[in-house]
Image 1 (cartoon, one colour):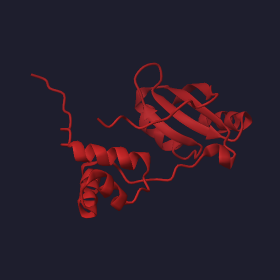
Image 2: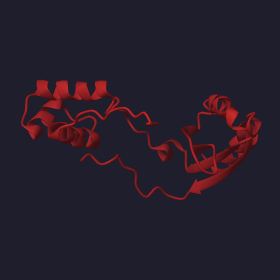
Image 3: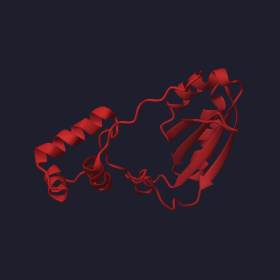
Length: 159
């Protein structure tokens, strides 16, 4: 019998879910405020959050930079076709050196790799395609989609 391997899901109870809902809305919320909302001690919240970190349910916290406030006004998604699947690792290593590429996914379907790229202008995007991506060995061709506006972005639901 051939079974696919999957990691067991961590045990998350109602208190963990409430904590997750609060901290994903505001990563800077003080633990004492979370404790008050949950009706438990600050130490209990600290222990629960540490447990969630150790389990990999959450990973740290971060400040989110608004790209347009720094002049990055063009957001594009790009599908990369590879000459051969074996080029995946070297292509990913090469495009990691292009700082405007902010996400990279190895995918099924038409594209081998799907990336998100933030540039200052469409001309800046064209320069990266022409001068950087066209030089990466293993990329056969690309297909680009420019985002006109992000309607929403959210975390997975905590249930």
